[in-house]
Length: 309
Length: 259
Image 1 (cartoon, rainbow over the protein chains, first blue to last red):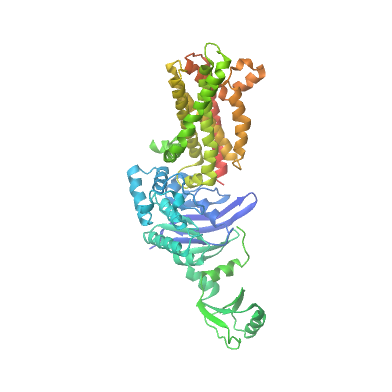
Image 2 (image 1 turned 60 degrees about the vertical axis):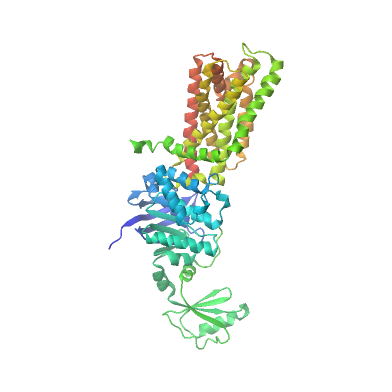
């Protein structure tokens, strides 16, 4: 069955006082899929999310959400979106339940329906016991869950999540993933930005890798891994002093594999999924074969330079 | 029809108004002291303390002259405090406006909501002072009840002006200058403490161009029951201040929030 396009972005550009955050990006997001934006800090992910959510005007290009133009139908678009922003924007002057009820009011949801939906949301995100608590009393994981519950108060068609698990501990992350994949199974369309490869691999049906405001690659996680790094990675732990000699030995073996130098590890990306390590003098080294993952794709595409926030 | 109403800033503003009301109700113990105690103390200290040295102003005792000025000034202060420090905290520290923008709310709704809220606080403050002044026998006309809707207008004027500042301020410290360089001088020379006709001509003209002077005169006319046709002009001046400030504040708030 052909799925409907719910968000279409064409040649979108975003400039802030001379700085180009998004530089001519196209994508289409289909109904019911989880679409990921992967990229380092400053790649243009958040700017793209904000333009879709109608809180940041486009410099040029066009975006439609469910066929509506973001320039002309902001209020109508916002009615069908749920947004979880990176910044914690919970209301510290209200308790947990009233955070949801106030939000329901902004959406013109009638009181009875608002109470019911707030209860359902708190129940789903295991916050019902905390409904009378002050927001400051919640842990980081609970606050993030409450933010997601709040974004669902209007029963949105599309959920926009900007780094939904940044700063959470592993348990809290897992719980958020769990809830998000449950929502996905219920058919909600999701947009997700993240710089966690495992998160993108776990949640996203399709994704784009962005850097410096441009899309570098797009596809399913499997397609990206296959086409950009292959199936297999060989990792060799190596002390700094021994590195140059080892690299020379590997290169002289002419295996055809691409070699990458990452701190105390050398990575070999074999060209067609298998490699013979004979003649590289690897005896005594800690050698691991592992499947390639999105992190390999990401580093391949975006390089290793550190990004300032 | 309803969908048109839903696009007016008053509709969206009412949501923010309700949110602020809920927040204050949760913190009422903190709020209640400032609301009643400060104007009460000022009335006792100035009206009866200072007033016993000053003598009458026209037909009014000094305390009777002062009370309407305090009603207008405290309506101004309460509205301004909330629309400056309060709104700035909501916007910058708590990102509440950012969150609202993820809903059908737009920047003009937020400005309208804060102005409606500031106006409401002005009415509550005016009611508190009016109550105290009535207990002290300083209010001589039942028309004084009309000072409550007037306080709403006064609150709207100052909250709207304050929202221009809030929308453009880069630090919370920027608010301080508004109080020390604008509100407090106005408080002293807008007919709150003494009649303006003692001031030099130019100073009088300036005072009448500032919003607190018509505000205080309007309240005094109602509290004493001495009506003049000028009251219509003063009302119009206040409405104009509110409307222009609302428009300007909405413009700057959009520029600030939607980047």
